Each structure stands twice: as structure tokens, then as C-alpha cells.
Length: 157
Length: 157
Length: 157
Image (cartoon, rainbow over all chains, first blue to last red):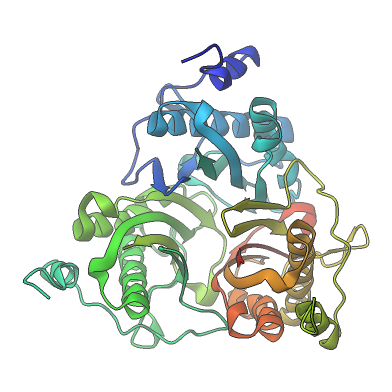
């Protein structure tokens, strides 16, 4: 133990965010599976306090900014799941890969800008180690009509 | 060799299922690639005896139950491919990750329930080790108009 | 150094292709992340000389052949990114996994044929080690309206 403990959680607080309670799985899956030092994190949705907080498609009813807010909440849920799995976010070595699915009206093609909401938050929190390889894609529909779903691969110490 | 051999295949039979013949690749890909003890399984479709068995979109022409049956057949094809690759399903240590793509009418948002068809079967077969990290998503179209496609990452001994 | 150096790049040239300049990331991501000997390559788009070269959906305005050409350019961009990350494509041990997303009109269900454009090129370049596990899927929209996006996992020495 030293003065550096929980530095990542402190950083999250300094940025004005709070880690959500890691929600119990809403279906038959495990939030985080580990192989060696690699964590596979299930697709995270913009869920808060037991409810979907961001729903609908980007491109008509929802704009890019709304999608970015949804993406940030997905990331906070991802970090809550990782903390729940390994106990301490300071053990994160790098965010390896993000797959960002954006519920999109056909014709909307700025999924990469929506995904930037997720990516920027991870860089703000982890610095260069948070700048993951990434795929952003549009889909016509996500579970529970959420606006964004994000899965991740994370390397830990 | 001992009395425990092939216990996973026995379990599959007890549940009333049969492993399909591992179909030859229908395109230019390898069914299973291995890195260390991690298997990457190509996207599996609900294919049986050389034909697509479940086609069409969930949300209008097809319902959740139909999608779940399709998802189960994808999993049986996945297990057949894994058996073909490593010889014995008893070497499976954990099902790490599933990505479940559901061909969806726009407006249908219960992809997680469709995916449960796959997840429940894996839990029935492997117990807690079969409860993978998971992403479920809707897409507007899958190859050969199949209803569900599932890829997986599996750790073996 | 010996006569075998750069044999993969020579093969690419013999096939009549040129590696594009590895484009700077157009958003907040890292083109390639490494965990041990596994490379995770960000979703690659059919981008050349600073511009999208293949756009629109397969199924009406674009045909399978157009999609296959787009897929090949995605692969060339992937190899350029890998070369940029590890210095030398001869260090590639196997192409482990490809995920091929095809921007699709609803009703178009030949995404596997589009993906074959990518797969065949990798087999032409790397031989059997280039024949990856694969998922091909349709989506209703991709970033910047590109026709195809491909992400990959590659094992290196």
C-alpha cells in the first residue's frame, strides 16, 4: 500500500464521473472472463440504476452528442465490471481493443465520432495505455433499444 | 483413459442433442484457429446436413423461440468444429466469449433473449465454465439469410 | 539478413499490389495493440491516399465484385498497419481471425462472398497461414459510408 493506490479511481472522480454499481448480469453471461492476463468484457450498455439511460437510434431522434454520452456510460459500466472482477483498476495495463456498436438510422455514417466519446474517456483516465485498437460500426438494432453497446479486451498485470 | 472420458459428449447426448458433422468450410476460412491455448472459432450458422435450417429475421416472420433454436444449432456446430480441431471436448477449460449476431427487423430489440438460447445450452453442457462473456447485437442481414450467427473464443487445456 | 528477407512484401508486389501508406488514425484509437505475440488490428476501411475509395451498400448500388475490391484494400491497409507496428511482415506467423462487416442493403445475403475478397488475398500472400478463422456479417451502415470494414487478430513471432 502506498499513496498511489486507487489512482485510477481517483482520476475517474477528478474527471467528474462515478463508477456505477456493477449491475448483475441481465441474461446468461459472465461480465468478465479471464485468460491469462487478458480480460474479455461482455458488451456493456448505457444502463444506470437498473434502467436503460440512453435509447433510440443516432441519425434522427438522437444526435452524435447523445451517442457520445451513451458511449461514456458504457465505458463506466465496463470499468465497474473490471473492478468487480479484479478488485483494483490500477492493475489495468492497457485497454487492448474496443468494439463499439452504434444503433444507427440507415444513412447515418458518423459511428466513429460516437465511438470517440468512449475512446476519449479512456484516454483521459488511463493516458496512452487507454488508447485502444478499435472498431466502430453501425447496426440497425441493439438489445433493449440501447443507443450504444461496447465490448472490450483489457490486459491486466 | 478412464471412466470420465468423453463426459462432455455424453452430457450433450443426455440433453437430447447430437453433434452435427463438422461441415467443410463453405468459404475461404479455417473453422478454428489456435493461439496458445486459446481457440478462435469462426462465425457459426444454423446449418445442418448441408443446408441452412433457420433463416429469416426475428421480429416479424420469426419469433424469439425460433431464434433461440437457431442459436442452439450454431452452438452445436461450434462444438463440432472444436471437437474436430482438438479431438475431445473434455479439453475445453472455459467458454471465454460469445458474439451473437441476430438478423433483426428494425424495431426488434430482444437480441439478448435470442442469445440466451446459445448461452443456456453451453451452461447446461459445461456448467459455470460454459457461462461466457457475451455480446448480443442485431444486424439487418446475415450471410445466406441465416437467423443467427455466433462466433466464439474458447480456452482449452 | 539473407535472401529471404521481405519475402512477404515481395509476394505482395508479385501479386500486383502495393502497400498503402499506413494512414494516421482518423479518430481516437491505436491502429495495432499487442498482447504477447498477438496483435489486435483496428477496423480497417477501404481508404487510399487520404480518401475513402469504396463507399455505398452492397446489394443495390454496389455489387459483390465491388465489395471484394473494397475488402482487398482493407486488407492492404491492415498489412500496412501491421508493418508499421512490427517493422517486417515476415514476422507474421498466422492470421488468426478476421471480422468482415459489409454495408448491406436489407435483402442482400452474400456477405461471405464479399469477405472472400479479403480471405483470398491473405491466402495468396501468406499461404495456409493466411487462412483465418472468420466472421462475415451485414450491417446497415458503416463509418464514412464505407462498403466494408475489416478487423483482424494476427499472431507474430
